[in-house]
Image (cartoon, rainbow, N blue to C red):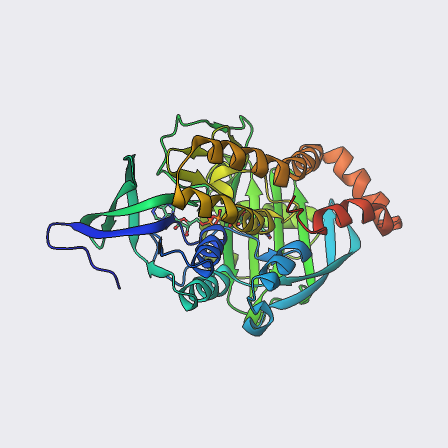
Length: 381
Ligand SMILES: Cc1cc2nc3c(=O)[nH]c(=O)nc-3n(C[C@H](O)[C@H](O)[C@H](O)COP(=O)(O)OP(=O)(O)OC[C@H]3O[C@@H](n4cnc5c(N)ncnc54)[C@H](O)[C@@H]3O)c2cc1C
């Protein structure tokens, strides 16, 4: 554990401070430490911790993890090979390229350990509150267990996710007016009607919910809901039960006992992905509703892609590096964000969704081009 000095200041100058130890932050910390940079990774949460996520790694994400020598298969993840899309009592059964389902408690903790194994330092329960740039470094004020201090680093990577507040709200962040919100929870036992290896996607009037078996036979549920759906149904469990019932899938017993993790407005775009000596990555850089289950692949790809720029920035900061990152990030995920957004907008029309599910039930192969696009490796050009 790295302690603050008595004056509340940490004197050490790190090469890189990573704020947020989700998939983007932990993977960036791993990559930076692997390149010989001194790295401090911080997160406001105590780990292991769950979070609002569907917990499905598509083929592109699995590939990125394996390229980083991360042994995802040793963690007991459940192999996935089918996607059941249910709406209005009809279910289409679509084959998908092999993916994996794993809880974020297990995945994120293992990724942090992976970064620590190559030399990154990690401080949980440490919240970054504000940051200021100086000519040679950045300073970030942090609070850990009620103790206020500051961390100095040549470069700061902001990977604080959808709920992140480190950057000012007016700092180029646009949230889509009709954006849905996220919610997720875990049923700690196997549930009748839900077999391992299948992603069940229930489409309802006010959102959609994905159900999948993760390690230890637990059933994980994640959903994108209209912003007032939970309030109008008198609670998240009721809103989810409504969506699942409406789709024709069985409502898991035990929903009311679930402990929920929430995520704020999901669809968002950040126009500026850098400040002096600071890069933004992961969901904090922009996100689209989770229907296609690609968020972790986007986050991992960004964490890998930023490394050459990060190395240069540690040696000497130039705004040109920030502009390059912006361009590269858009190239990396821009078309994928657009496709995902188009699909989720179509899904808001119930009649079209029902027709699509009927058609896919008859000919599952119709989904082939979209399924291949979602799972293809994220290009690192
Ligand atoms: C309902 C839902 C379902 C989803 N389903 C899938 C799916 O099936 N497959 C998939 O690939 N993707 C899915 N996603 C997307 C996926 O969860 C994200 O894209 C991914 O987690 C992004 O990783 P990240 O590291 O950018 O952010 P996060 O994983 O959110 O990590 C951000 C971290 O920053 C920390 N933090 C925030 N503020 C501070 C601060 N001030 N100081 C210190 N730490 C801070 C948080 O505690 C958190 O640990 C889903 C998302 C939602 C909402």
